[in-house]
Image (cartoon, rainbow, N blue to C red; front, top):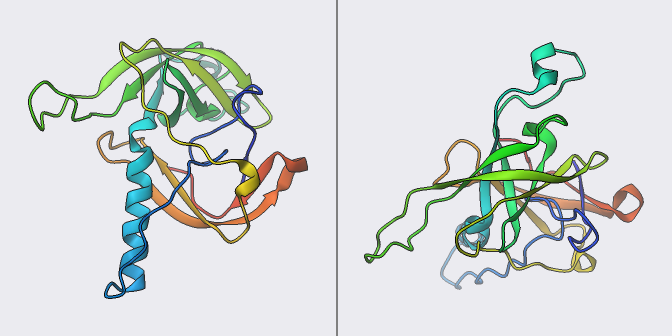
Length: 206
């Protein structure tokens, strides 16, 4: 699968698992720890570092295209994942659940442990997201919501640091809002699609 790698400052750049890629520097396994177990721990640590920035995206209502049941009215059949790219409510997602004639979506933020009591877990928050931009070539949609406090944003690595053979981890929130999904693969190639994409075999579907 080929995924894009541009930076957010240009327009729409970073997609949940797909662009820029959050920096992942998991702890090395101890000499007594089997390599396989050390890798598993590193993968879990990597997802935990970006989990707070992963959200669920659901369209509001039914689009005109879906009502017509036109063959070209694809996909838009269910929820998708999104990634917070700025703390003031900017979210990047795929066009999977946001058809061209849908202007608003429901953004569900994951539960967190920021309650007033120790270890109190706050329930997921649901916000309205407005569609502010689209990139049809890459299948990306830029959303804006109005959170009541800053949203967590992942730490980004420069695209120039990516190399074929590095681990690639796909993570998102579609069905289980409390526990992000995870798929692991490798970066198969960089500088695809005229330098705008990388290729990975990590599965990015729900």
